[in-house]
Length: 130
Image (tube, rainbow, N blue to C red; front, side):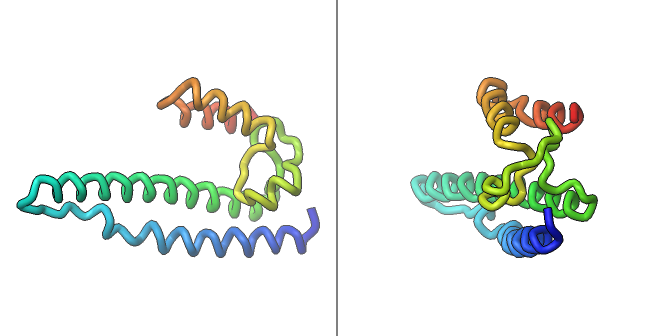
């Protein structure tokens, strides 16, 4: 990968990181609001649950973006963490924070679907196996 390509990915990742940091810092949606009306309470709880899920998703994405920036600094960006093959340029263009090639990602997704809550353990296993 050329230095100009790496610089482009780094700029893209840094912009995404700034966007996600701003989103993660805004936690107003998870504030607990009391209401005398039971229906309003249910509505507030549903909105809070959605805000928490969004915050969790964006926090995970932020971790992935920061990990990709570390890989750029370490010189291992664009290499699958599991099989150590190059990640395709098309995949990196679409998902610059991708830690795995498409084949390893599909394998991880299949296992995650079957494992449910043990998905993080599988991710750790993939990374540590490489």
